[in-house]
Length: 116
Image: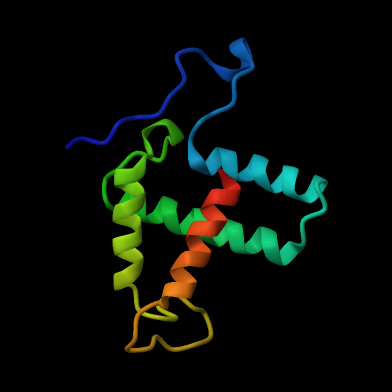
């Protein structure tokens, strides 16, 4: 299945509509979260979850346009997380033999829900 290209019909300057690509929305989310007084740790956790989803979608050849992300893509992301080793991408800790815990995966999903 070919990946869709996410592009607005007309430019945002013409319509005032926001981009619907996750990376663009992430920057807007950060501004909103700071304005709402969310803690830096909360914001960082949500950024980590969204970036993990973006990386997964891109590596799977899937669109990062929010209109193209549904239950199918999120279930595939959950399966992907279940196969990730603990601390696999951590800058200071060595990867563990065990996978991510159910609690950690749930944290990713809660963060994505809050972002959405």
